[in-house]
Length: 64
Image (cartoon, rainbow, N blue to C red; front, side, top):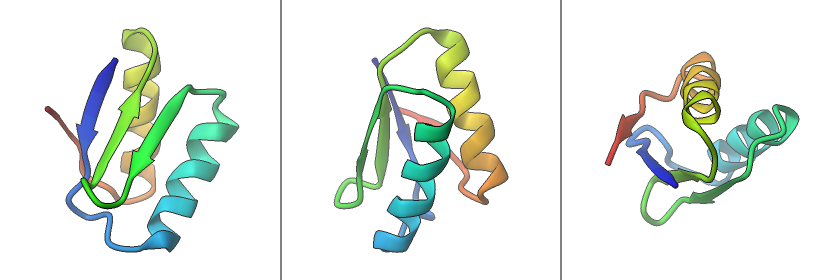
């Protein structure tokens, strides 16, 4: 399990965009707007894919 911090996540619309992208990629994840985090349950490739998708959406992520 890897936690990605996304400080740019500010609202439910952000959560919706992230959820749609990660679901479309078939990833197992949980988004927390309160913590501004996305938790990825998967291998290194899954985490890399999630980071790539988040970057494409304009969210800078940092592993915590």
